Image (cartoon, rainbow over all chains, first blue to last red; front, side, top):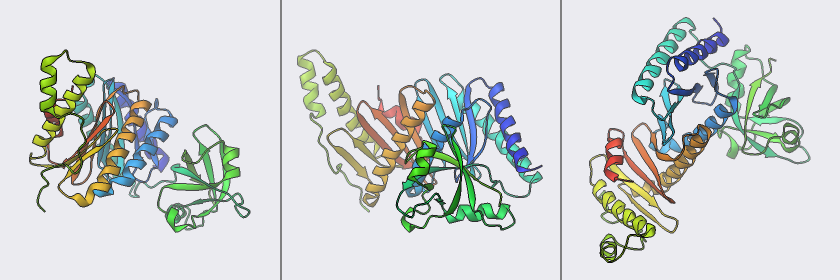
Amino acid sequence: MNKDLYAEALKNTLTEIRNTCPGIKSSFIFTKDGAIVAGDAETADIIIGKTLNSFQNVAEKAGTIGGLHNFYVDGDKGKVYISRINDMYLVTATSKNADTNNLLSVTQVIVRTILKLLESIIPAPLKSTQPQQLTVDTFSGFFAGDTVQVDLPLLTEWSKFFNGKNINEIEVETFGGETTRCKVKEINDPNLQGKGIIRIPERVCKALEVNKGEPVKIKPVEP
Amino acid sequence: MPRKTKPQEEKIENSPSKLESTMEESTITPKLKFQHSIGNLHANLENLKTREGVVGYIFRTQKSASIDLKDPTKIIDYAVLSSTVLEAGENLANMFELGNIYKVTLEGKDVKILTLKIGDNRLSIFMDKTADQDRIYKDLNIT
């Protein structure tokens, strides 16, 4: 079983939970570093992307209370729960009248069980080369070129999946559906490191029709 | 560190006692109702902060903020966090069509935050993770 099957198994799990529990409007899972692991079949990528953006904003500030463990939003037409499961977060959106305590318990127990089962089948931890979501930061200048910049730890992590080969190119995809391949190197400004951003030259941003502060998905191109 | 007995800044237009006398004399207008509820809220917060597990609160109106935290060194961090939490809650509410927000809760390793939007005002209550936030929300008696 490879990691695509891992994600597929989780996706099927979430889809079946949603089919069984009509109170669940949407559910998906992502890792603490913002990589989308799996989502049910009905949840749009744009929703997942924007949720990750909001999550990351809170997670950045939550260090003062020992990190982000759970995050709940309670509205008059429904609720959203972001719950930590191991090193991942499960997002569940429910309708107004859903029995949320029951739904959350059932969903979390099932997802935990599936994760445990999958991890026993796949010894490697779930750190796949699936798309990572980062927030766009722009830069310009005579020497800007077409090379984008991301955090070095991300490049190092990806490199491990390709037998230590350096990652020189990545694919950038916007939530509007535009994609491009770019050369990549580490972020050279220490003040911008570790903030979950991708620095993209302005002219590449124009081609992608993406602006500063917007989320994009990136994945490595196999060296 | 000794507990502060008064909020650090408080600029509410009318005190509850003044409001009560006004209300006896005239019909309750929406503005008075709102002022009255804010007055009640302050009274409830004063009671709440003595409860075991509650570590403080930040109440922000458009003109002022009342802050009462057991650990004053965390005022800035908690103020930024509460603002971010509510903003993220509003974003999620828009995306998932949750309607009007009743409350947003953030749980950390040791502390959790209950954040509410009351009209144009924002209230964040900070508490130990073991505290019962549903009970606290209920006791605030926000209508």
